Image (tube, rainbow, N blue to C red; front, side, top):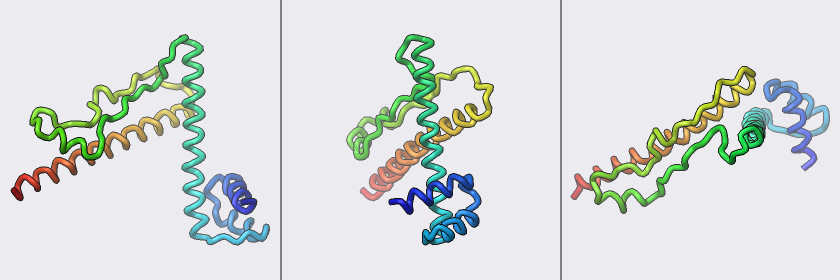
Length: 156
C-alpha cells in the first residue's frame, strides 16, 4: 500500500504528465513499476482526481446556493432517465410510446450566470459534457433496442 501511495504522490507532483521523470523517481526510491502501466495509471489517477474536484466543487456550489437562496434546489438540476433494461419490450405494444429516455427538455440544465473564473467555468463545462455523454449513451441504447425490435418483427 505504501508503494501505491508513493507512486500516486510522484504522479501528482509531476502534474500527471512527466511520466519519464516519475518513472526515474520511482526507480530511485526502489519502487518497481511498469513504464506503460505508469502511463495508464497516471491517466486514470488524473481522471479520478478531477472527478473528486468536480464533486467537491458541486457540493460547495450547492451549499453556497442553499445558503444564499435558503432553498434546497441546486444550481444544476437533472432528471434521471426512466430507462430500465428490458422495460422497452414490455411497453413496445403501445405504438405511441417509444421512448423510455428522459425527454431533452426535462434533461436541460437550469442555467446560472456564466462564471467569470476560468477554472470554475472549465469545471462547469466538463460537468455538462459528462451529462451529455450519459444522455448519448441512453439514446444509443434505445436506438439499439428499436433496431433489434425491427429485426425481430421482420423475422416473424
